[in-house]
Length: 185
Ligand SMILES: CC(C)(COP(=O)(O)OP(=O)(O)OC[C@H]1O[C@@H](n2cnc3c(N)ncnc32)[C@H](O)[C@@H]1OP(=O)(O)O)[C@@H](O)C(=O)NCCC(=O)NCCS
Image 1 (tube, rainbow, N blue to C red):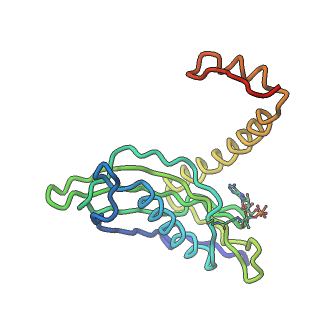
Image 2: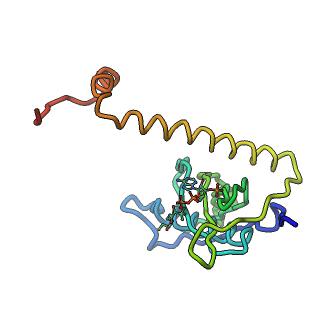
Protein backbone atom coordinates (compact mmCIF):
# COMPACT_ATOMS: atom_id res chain seq x y z
CA UNK A 1 0.00 0.00 0.00
CA UNK A 2 1.15 3.56 -0.78
CA UNK A 3 2.73 5.45 2.08
CA UNK A 4 1.18 8.80 3.13
CA UNK A 5 2.27 11.20 5.87
CA UNK A 6 0.64 14.20 7.50
CA UNK A 7 2.02 17.75 7.33
CA UNK A 8 2.63 18.00 11.13
CA UNK A 9 4.71 14.79 10.99
CA UNK A 10 7.62 16.68 9.40
CA UNK A 11 6.96 20.27 10.52
CA UNK A 12 10.27 21.71 11.69
CA UNK A 13 11.31 24.90 13.48
CA UNK A 14 14.89 26.10 13.65
CA UNK A 15 15.75 28.95 16.01
CA UNK A 16 19.09 30.69 16.04
CA UNK A 17 20.56 33.72 17.81
CA UNK A 18 22.00 36.32 15.44
CA UNK A 19 25.58 36.82 16.64
CA UNK A 20 27.89 39.73 15.65
CA UNK A 21 29.92 37.60 13.21
CA UNK A 22 26.75 37.27 11.06
CA UNK A 23 26.60 41.01 10.32
CA UNK A 24 27.26 42.78 7.04
CA UNK A 25 29.02 46.13 6.55
CA UNK A 26 25.80 47.94 7.49
CA UNK A 27 25.56 46.18 10.86
CA UNK A 28 22.52 44.07 9.87
CA UNK A 29 22.52 40.30 9.42
CA UNK A 30 23.99 39.18 6.09
CA UNK A 31 21.29 37.79 3.75
CA UNK A 32 23.41 34.72 3.01
CA UNK A 33 23.22 33.65 6.67
CA UNK A 34 19.42 33.59 6.48
CA UNK A 35 19.52 31.72 3.15
CA UNK A 36 21.83 29.11 4.67
CA UNK A 37 19.47 28.60 7.62
CA UNK A 38 16.52 28.33 5.22
CA UNK A 39 18.30 25.60 3.29
CA UNK A 40 19.07 23.77 6.53
CA UNK A 41 15.48 23.81 7.81
CA UNK A 42 14.14 22.87 4.35
CA UNK A 43 16.47 19.89 4.32
CA UNK A 44 15.42 18.73 7.81
CA UNK A 45 11.72 18.99 6.97
CA UNK A 46 12.02 17.32 3.54
CA UNK A 47 14.28 14.50 4.78
CA UNK A 48 11.86 13.75 7.59
CA UNK A 49 8.92 13.49 5.19
CA UNK A 50 10.91 11.50 2.63
CA UNK A 51 12.72 9.26 5.11
CA UNK A 52 15.62 9.75 2.75
CA UNK A 53 18.54 12.01 1.90
CA UNK A 54 17.36 15.09 -0.09
CA UNK A 55 18.96 17.76 -2.29
CA UNK A 56 17.85 21.32 -3.00
CA UNK A 57 16.85 21.81 -6.64
CA UNK A 58 15.17 25.18 -6.65
CA UNK A 59 14.29 28.19 -4.52
CA UNK A 60 11.18 30.15 -5.35
CA UNK A 61 11.63 33.86 -4.64
CA UNK A 62 13.22 35.18 -1.50
CA UNK A 63 12.16 38.75 -0.75
CA UNK A 64 13.69 40.29 2.34
CA UNK A 65 10.85 42.39 3.76
CA UNK A 66 12.69 43.78 6.79
CA UNK A 67 16.30 43.70 8.01
CA UNK A 68 17.37 41.17 10.63
CA UNK A 69 19.29 42.71 13.53
CA UNK A 70 22.22 41.28 15.44
CA UNK A 71 20.96 40.09 18.85
CA UNK A 72 17.57 38.98 17.53
CA UNK A 73 16.31 35.40 17.67
CA UNK A 74 15.48 34.12 14.21
CA UNK A 75 12.94 31.30 13.88
CA UNK A 76 12.39 29.45 10.63
CA UNK A 77 9.15 27.49 10.42
CA UNK A 78 9.10 24.85 7.72
CA UNK A 79 6.38 22.53 6.50
CA UNK A 80 5.68 20.35 3.50
CA UNK A 81 3.32 22.22 1.16
CA UNK A 82 3.31 19.85 -1.79
CA UNK A 83 4.74 16.52 -2.92
CA UNK A 84 5.31 15.28 -6.45
CA UNK A 85 6.87 11.98 -7.35
CA UNK A 86 10.35 12.55 -5.93
CA UNK A 87 10.09 16.28 -5.21
CA UNK A 88 8.85 18.01 -2.06
CA UNK A 89 8.00 21.70 -1.80
CA UNK A 90 8.79 23.15 1.60
CA UNK A 91 7.20 26.44 2.64
CA UNK A 92 9.39 28.43 5.01
CA UNK A 93 8.37 31.42 7.11
CA UNK A 94 11.17 33.40 8.73
CA UNK A 95 10.44 35.57 11.72
CA UNK A 96 12.57 37.39 14.23
CA UNK A 97 12.02 38.13 17.89
CA UNK A 98 13.54 41.05 19.72
CA UNK A 99 14.53 39.42 23.01
CA UNK A 100 13.90 42.54 25.12
CA UNK A 101 10.71 43.97 23.56
CA UNK A 102 9.31 40.56 22.47
CA UNK A 103 8.39 42.19 19.15
CA UNK A 104 7.94 39.57 16.39
CA UNK A 105 8.72 40.54 12.78
CA UNK A 106 8.00 38.51 9.66
CA UNK A 107 11.11 39.03 7.53
CA UNK A 108 10.56 36.66 4.60
CA UNK A 109 8.88 33.55 3.25
CA UNK A 110 9.99 31.24 0.50
CA UNK A 111 9.46 27.87 -1.13
CA UNK A 112 12.29 25.39 -1.49
CA UNK A 113 11.94 22.41 -3.82
CA UNK A 114 13.88 19.42 -2.54
CA UNK A 115 14.31 16.07 -4.29
CA UNK A 116 14.68 12.81 -2.36
CA UNK A 117 17.63 10.68 -3.45
CA UNK A 118 17.85 6.92 -3.18
CA UNK A 119 20.82 4.67 -2.43
CA UNK A 120 21.48 4.59 -6.19
CA UNK A 121 21.88 8.42 -6.19
CA UNK A 122 18.75 8.71 -8.35
CA UNK A 123 15.52 10.58 -7.44
CA UNK A 124 13.45 8.37 -5.14
CA UNK A 125 9.68 8.26 -4.64
CA UNK A 126 8.42 10.17 -1.61
CA UNK A 127 5.35 9.44 0.53
CA UNK A 128 2.12 11.20 -0.43
CA UNK A 129 0.69 13.98 1.73
CA UNK A 130 -2.39 13.77 3.96
CA UNK A 131 -4.12 17.17 3.94
CA UNK A 132 -6.03 17.73 7.18
CA UNK A 133 -6.90 21.44 7.14
CA UNK A 134 -8.17 24.03 4.67
CA UNK A 135 -4.83 25.85 4.97
CA UNK A 136 -2.97 22.68 3.98
CA UNK A 137 -5.25 22.23 0.94
CA UNK A 138 -4.73 25.89 -0.03
CA UNK A 139 -0.93 25.60 0.28
CA UNK A 140 -0.90 22.37 -1.75
CA UNK A 141 -3.00 24.00 -4.48
CA UNK A 142 -0.83 27.17 -4.49
CA UNK A 143 2.31 25.03 -4.96
CA UNK A 144 0.62 23.10 -7.77
CA UNK A 145 -0.27 26.42 -9.39
CA UNK A 146 3.30 27.78 -9.02
CA UNK A 147 4.54 24.60 -10.71
CA UNK A 148 2.23 25.24 -13.67
CA UNK A 149 3.37 28.88 -13.82
CA UNK A 150 7.03 27.75 -13.73
CA UNK A 151 6.43 25.62 -16.84
CA UNK A 152 5.11 28.68 -18.68
CA UNK A 153 7.96 30.86 -17.34
CA UNK A 154 10.59 28.33 -18.52
CA UNK A 155 9.03 28.19 -21.99
CA UNK A 156 9.08 32.00 -22.18
CA UNK A 157 12.69 32.13 -20.99
CA UNK A 158 13.70 29.63 -23.68
CA UNK A 159 11.85 31.72 -26.26
CA UNK A 160 13.50 35.04 -25.37
CA UNK A 161 16.98 33.47 -25.28
CA UNK A 162 16.60 32.99 -29.02
CA UNK A 163 18.77 35.58 -30.82
CA UNK A 164 16.16 36.11 -33.51
CA UNK A 165 14.13 38.00 -30.89
CA UNK A 166 16.77 40.79 -30.60
CA UNK A 167 14.63 43.33 -32.48
CA UNK A 168 11.73 42.74 -30.12
CA UNK A 169 14.10 42.95 -27.15
CA UNK A 170 15.42 46.35 -28.34
CA UNK A 171 11.86 47.63 -28.67
CA UNK A 172 10.81 46.39 -25.22
CA UNK A 173 13.84 47.79 -23.38
CA UNK A 174 13.80 51.12 -25.23
CA UNK A 175 12.56 52.99 -22.13
CA UNK A 176 14.88 51.25 -19.68
CA UNK A 177 18.05 52.84 -18.24
CA UNK A 178 20.49 51.40 -20.74
CA UNK A 179 22.36 52.76 -23.77
CA UNK A 180 23.07 50.50 -26.74
CA UNK A 181 26.74 50.77 -27.82
CA UNK A 182 27.23 47.62 -29.92
CA UNK A 183 30.89 46.60 -30.24
CA UNK A 184 30.17 43.62 -32.50
CA UNK A 185 28.90 43.35 -36.06
C1 LIG B 1 17.90 16.64 -8.28
C2 LIG B 1 18.36 16.06 -9.60
C3 LIG B 1 18.96 14.68 -9.37
C4 LIG B 1 17.12 15.91 -10.49
O1 LIG B 1 17.57 15.42 -11.71
P1 LIG B 1 16.62 15.40 -12.96
O2 LIG B 1 17.36 14.82 -14.07
O3 LIG B 1 15.95 16.73 -13.16
O4 LIG B 1 15.56 14.33 -12.48
P2 LIG B 1 14.06 14.25 -12.84
O5 LIG B 1 13.77 14.85 -14.18
O6 LIG B 1 13.65 12.83 -12.56
O7 LIG B 1 13.36 15.21 -11.77
C5 LIG B 1 13.24 14.80 -10.44
C6 LIG B 1 12.26 15.74 -9.77
O8 LIG B 1 12.89 17.02 -9.60
C7 LIG B 1 12.02 18.02 -10.07
N1 LIG B 1 12.84 19.12 -10.55
C8 LIG B 1 13.95 19.03 -11.30
N2 LIG B 1 14.44 20.27 -11.52
C9 LIG B 1 13.62 21.12 -10.90
C10 LIG B 1 13.58 22.53 -10.76
N3 LIG B 1 14.50 23.32 -11.31
N4 LIG B 1 12.60 23.08 -10.04
C11 LIG B 1 11.66 22.32 -9.46
N5 LIG B 1 11.63 20.96 -9.55
C12 LIG B 1 12.60 20.39 -10.27
C13 LIG B 1 11.23 17.36 -11.18
O9 LIG B 1 10.03 18.06 -11.45
C14 LIG B 1 10.99 15.99 -10.59
O10 LIG B 1 9.91 16.08 -9.68
P3 LIG B 1 8.89 14.85 -9.49
O11 LIG B 1 9.72 13.60 -9.34
O12 LIG B 1 8.18 15.15 -8.22
O13 LIG B 1 8.01 14.81 -10.67
C15 LIG B 1 19.41 16.95 -10.32
O14 LIG B 1 18.77 18.12 -10.80
C16 LIG B 1 20.55 17.33 -9.41
O15 LIG B 1 21.36 16.52 -9.03
N6 LIG B 1 20.63 18.63 -9.04
C17 LIG B 1 21.63 19.11 -8.14
C18 LIG B 1 21.07 19.11 -6.73
C19 LIG B 1 22.13 19.56 -5.74
O16 LIG B 1 23.23 19.07 -5.75
N7 LIG B 1 21.75 20.53 -4.89
C20 LIG B 1 22.65 21.13 -3.98
C21 LIG B 1 23.36 22.24 -4.68
S1 LIG B 1 24.74 22.77 -3.77
